Image 1 (cartoon, rainbow, N blue to C red):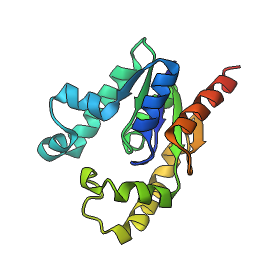
Image 2 (cartoon, one colour):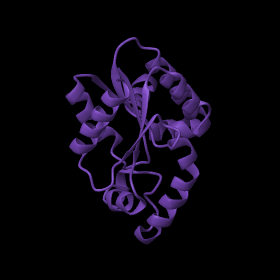
Image 3 (cartoon, helix red, strand yellow):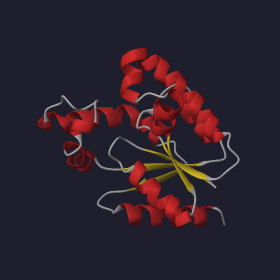
Image 4 (cartoon, helix red, strand yellow):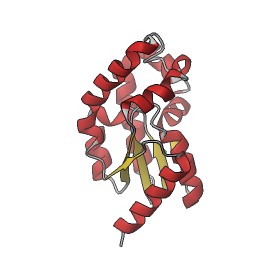
Length: 175
């Protein structure tokens, strides 16, 4: 089984992905970490040194490499991954179950305000402007996220509950 997690930054893709991988005894992969290993640079260094266009091209190549694997895995993507190039169509055409972790704007704000220092995209945005920034971003990305095979409402749920819900829904779909 291959499962790909989509969602906005702070939606819990990595945290839920690790819980899901443990529950299903599958390998966990983080696309950003996979890219950093392959490029031998951090995402920030790639953006700074080679630009976003180069990053997005590499992101798609690494995504294709992962999806071509015969083994089972849980993959956490970057928040923007499905929104660039043909990535979403590539994901939907793969054998992977594509799962969108849907989190309300204010819950994302509560999570991300604590992580601003580690999030270059929002680092310089005043806390009071985060809801509008995230809301605008989500509006732009919802057309992509909502095309996932499975949408999980994560509002006020722990990562363990979200992972359990994904397993249950995937099992019920496969029957």
